[in-house]
Length: 471
Image 1 (cartoon, rainbow, N blue to C red):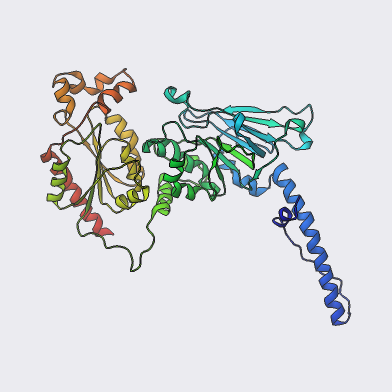
Image 2 (cartoon, one colour):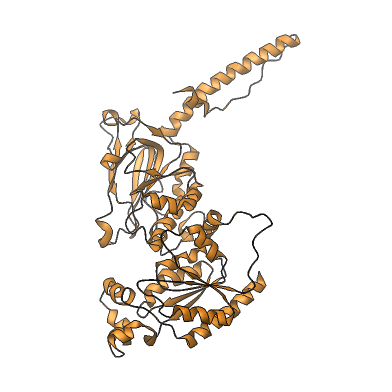
């Protein structure tokens, strides 16, 4: 052990000398000598014992870092030191915990638990588990593209991985591939589960990412900085052996853009995640104070291209302006910084858009703001689950604008009497997700009835004005 390593565990003790009556200079010399000896002893003994305890028998601080009490209802809540435990009870995701000296080996897609010498005997059963650390284990379409990670306990001659990078915080290992790149999946399958699994660690955790992408790290850097004080580790491409005092492999999933307070020891909810997003993106204080609030309520219309487009978007904007809204059309793009999205939506009174991934940015709206989801024909269920129910849990005022058959392009494609148009619920019964996706999501545009829309936006305007009066 180096002196530097011992220094970080320095805990000097105090001691009192036997009372005598020497002359002042002799007393000063004697006290100085005793203190120096005690200081040197504490640097050695306390430093050494802390090093051993950290890897062989985790102290309270290490237990708190892994904090299995946050998952007290799972099968791994009583996991002991130098052990691996996997919880496979959830239908969405598996999660494993490793306590002890953890070492990465990317070329074999493995994470090793290095057992101490005391465990090096024939009676020890060396554990081995495999896990695909992604939150959609039920999804057959993506399952084959999720890499499998091997968790292996080793001892003695088999433990031949010298540490090249040593970390003093545990690792949180997860997969950032799959549907990553679609903002809904970025948050639903990634950011929200990442927050659920890591927020209790208070940023004292190293994020170890399978299928790491530079654009992903750059796009979400502000959020990642709220979850970890350390730069992410690219597991697949960083071939060095990283060593950690423990690891969590996989992420917890608790529902569509949701956090279940009853499953957390800290009673965290989706509103806690919203506070985290505000901390990540809130504007820095400007000279002279914050910019003035516009006199008129602000309506943001989220524009789509390709599928489910609002074909009469210009008319929609005009209706909003005639009512009195300050209207901004937001056209999300992959290259658009999330801070810009945050600044636009956190300052709006009303957000409106056709069901689709871009509506995920409603996470940036302030509680009490109004969210209007335009629900295409045949998409009622998926719209409610993906955005309607989460919006209410977030504290937003939620309104559905359900598209009538005559407002859908399907009316002209199939005809008024076709089951696709006349009774989407019966048509979809037993047909599966692919039909919903192909017919109602990817095969439909909308053209809103401006008279009907006027009534909805007028009520929204009045609500926004009344809410402004309360602030």
